[in-house]
Amino acid sequence: VQLQASGGGLVQAGGSLRLSCAASVQSFSKHTMAWFRRAPGKEREFVASISGNGESTYYADSVKGRFTISRDNARNLVYLQMGSLKPDDTAVYFCAAAFVGSYRVGYASEYQFTKWGQGTQVTVSS
Image 1 (cartoon, rainbow, N blue to C red):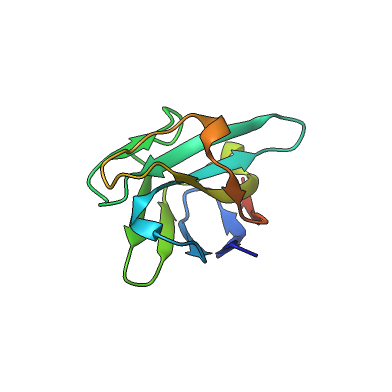
Image 2: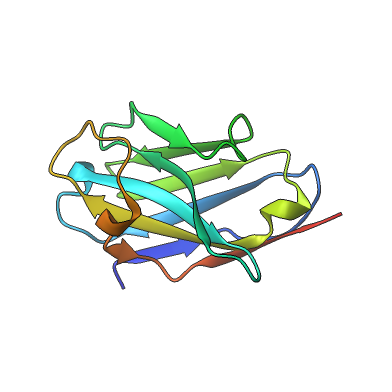
């Protein structure tokens, strides 16, 4: 397994969770990392992404201002800090890696993410 996500669980609306993703990939800092999610009965959707140097981040409009993506290149970890959670955030969250060969690319098309974790369930109760 190259990507291992953890940290999901059950939380009340308005609460917070932090997801972690441990990546076993070569040249981790040259990978754009991202979180996606798939809610019940819906297509997988982009949540957030981050450049190799951590300086560029992108967010879906639905999570902007509530979620923060970050990374620790020394430990090959990516995080998703989620706050002000809503029932609509209920989904399986996946981390993904796209080798872009650069430290500065903060966004990549979904097809570029060729490495995926197994997902972690986040359930937000109302």
